[in-house]
Amino acid sequence: NGIPVAIVGEPNVGKSTLLNSLLNEERAIVSDIAGTTRDTIEDEMSIGGVGFRFIDTAGIRETKDVVESIGIKKTFEKIGQAQVVVYLVDSSQIAVNRERLQEVRVEIEKIKNKFPQKPLLIIANKTDRLADEEIENLKAKLEDISSHAERAEFLLLSAKTNLGVEELKDRLLEFV
Ligand code: GDP
Ligand code: MG
Image (cartoon, rainbow, N blue to C red; front, side, top):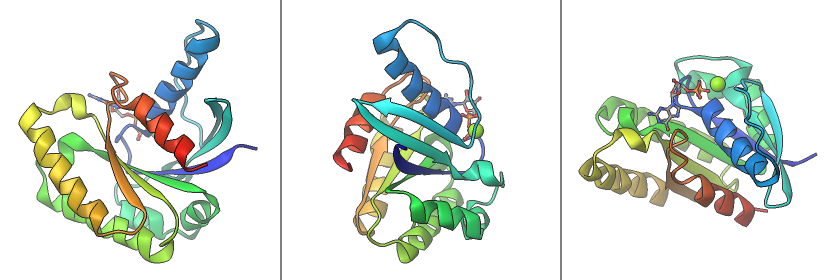
């Protein structure tokens, strides 16, 4: 079995799309077979020759409220078993919605209180929907959030255009 990576994030932030991007990129290396849209709870794939097992924790129970979602024992169990936690947010939401940003802050605190030593990678997805100045602004916010948490880092990404997906793979391999 591959290295377990828990993927946390509310519905529609792009968890399945990101898994597809990762899978399609890896498949493209060996063949031209296009990946089908997947919406499974677990996805095994090899990245740079290393096996990973991605666990979509929201798949356990889809809820709008990630605070509530991660409060569910099973989700925490999955995070507990994971070697790395990937926390996915929708850039276009948190760039314009202060409340949503505050929620994200609280959620990250919750995860970090329970698992201080577990590497946490905050991914701001859908950056293709942002203007350049919004991206700079978002970077500053995420820098602030991750600097206040132990072993937390962030990455700007677009699962749609594949921007940042290579970087994500590199970062994941660093945690191994
Ligand atoms: P999930 O519920 O977290 O698994 O989210 P999905 O992967 O199903 O994506 C929800 C919606 O967001 C779909 O319509 C995707 O096409 C869209 N989406 C996902 N990633 C991106 C992205 O990077 N940019 C944009 N513009 N849309 C995206
Ligand atoms: Mg999904």
